[in-house]
Length: 231
Image 1 (tube, rainbow, N blue to C red):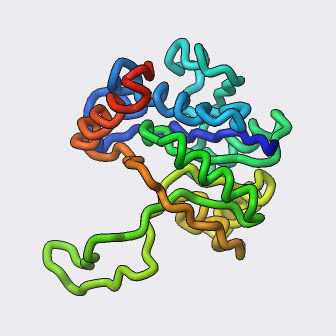
Image 2: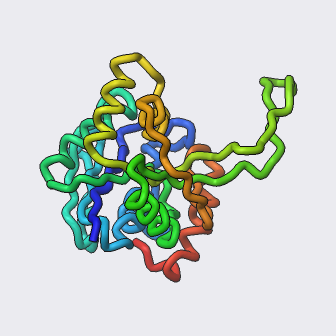
């Protein structure tokens, strides 16, 4: 059985979601967002460890590891997502697992079926795999006014998890940072390095909490997952 370590970058401040604390620590459906996220990741028994990348590991919420059933390693993040993920990969290296999945700390509603599907795809594809949704709406470009309609054929909305070989991802991120590229997800670094990750269609809602209204949506979704039994 192929085993994985999950890297969860959670060093951001989440200012767009409002509130006095980072959005990954906001309480939804009985527990902090980050707790729901971690438990969603370990729902698949191929995920054998989790590396949580934090702005300050000493301020990690208490009892995060309780009930996970796998080791939880906390480490300090960097100034950018790419830097934080590389620091997480360094910690993952000591765990001895060659495959990694990177998942946003503020996607707590990940469904077990979608997690299993992207892990399966990554095993079969040497370039890795990412969870994504095909664009269904008409796409417009513009600021205050529409300047053009963009053809949506072949367009996908990238999500996480994104699953790769640990060494390949580390090298791709290092090259992207060296070149000064803006990296908003790990797949973009892999693509720049010449890889073609497989697209895995998400079959269930997997929203990223970005704006204040996303908190209400995530709460409703979490209430329906596992009968509302997540912490």
